[in-house]
Amino acid sequence: MTKFATRAAAVAAAALLAATLAGCSSSAASLAVGECIAEPTTSDVASVERLDCTAAHDLEVYAVGNVEAANFVELDKNAQTFCLEAFQPYVGKAYEESELGIQYFTPDAVGFGKGDRGVQCLVSGPTGQQLTASVKGSNR
Image (tube, rainbow, N blue to C red):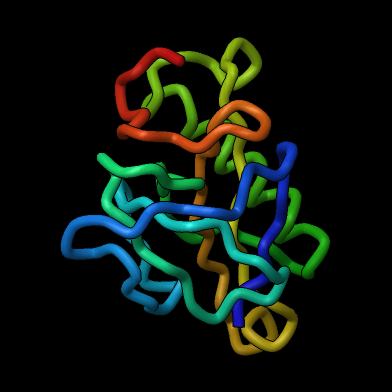
């Protein structure tokens, strides 16, 4: 399972089903940069609903990678730093100046204990708003 950490206000959970990826449920750990998903409804995320980025969606993956961490608390801190640093190169505007929010997936304690240090960074729309296009290079 993957732990879901929220670093912005939650956005609406409803999403339109559209295009070929709509409604497909798959592993959160397999998310790739540029994919869009519905916001998970629980903090333990084993699978996610992939959506077409041109349709209404809650989150867009903007960075994936591994972070160094000696313990679980350090993992969360380093994941947040990783995601904040990756935001501007993808969106085109510094996070502190953006209307958008960030969230990220990290391994749960079991995964961490097995050596998993994978992080998936996700961008969300302004509070309460879904995204309807990719935010890559949007300068939002």
